[in-house]
Length: 378
Ligand code: SAH
Image (cartoon, rainbow, N blue to C red; front, side, top):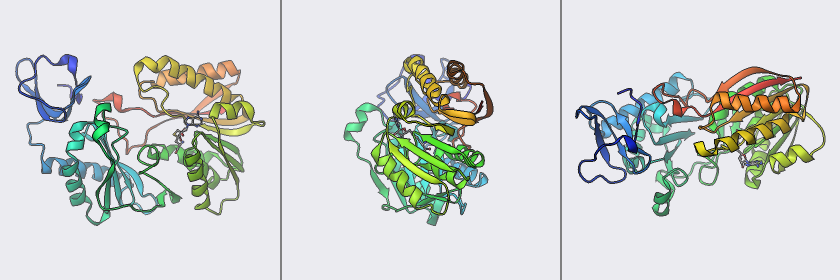
């Protein structure tokens, strides 16, 4: 009734008929009043609601939802832009399509189904995408192996649902990046850090920058365009560091120097001599579930403390958490404890979040996951 799109299994009194994983089901309240229609998924979140109206979930439903999603990205200056060709077209609940993510890379859409229902709807989704995007769509890649519920993964194969592989590079803010959705992390690129990368560019001039958890080196490329003197990129994945090297090669012409290291971030902080004027900390989600929250907060504290100890007075820290179960307040508190323990005065300059192509429904606060603080450290 409050339009939250999840129905938890414990809230269900009875199920009528034979219902299988991925089926479309209607949800009614105890007075038998219609509440919505959604995908059924055995597990804690039993139904993800697609519509609160009585309507057919058919071709016109998918077309309308995807058209709305595309219209928003056009208004945001992302779809149709000639300097950015990577953006999120569908962000699950934030676009009224719980369980579905679609990221655009040039003319390729990379979709991720988080539920059986969305996987089963892939045919309709591809049809609708082709219809609304026309010649701007050449391929659809289904990358759901990482996102489907565990037991469904055995029978699933990732692959093209339409078209074939498109080689990059792709553009973000006029910079070029490779994105490998077939082998890379997420859908191939951390699209969600775009606005934070722009902010880094603005603040990087003349600084010696350390980009920890750098993945494809995207923050590093922005830092160099922003006039950073030296940039070090660190990631524990060799494949990531190789991609970072390529991304630096295809964006030539920035005078600053770059070096990349395959290393554990904490080891690098502890064992590398010297200090930095700006450090980026963008670790993977430390907690995927509430039970792991305390450990995650400890992890953020230790990591931020180690980074703060390596920042010169007058330096900056860009620190992020993408753990959905860690709240903005909890994250900020662990960074505060880190600064206090390191004995460093620090001020918050910016509090950042996920960009607007990752919208958060007001009715679904769980959709907010990316939190960032930009600190000035004395
Ligand atoms: N900042 C990146 C995204 C980072 S994702 C961007 O904007 O593109 C997190 C990265 O941390 C991944 O590339 C992963 O390989 C790396 N990673 C995970 N554990 C690590 C560790 N202990 N030390 C260093 N890197 C690590």
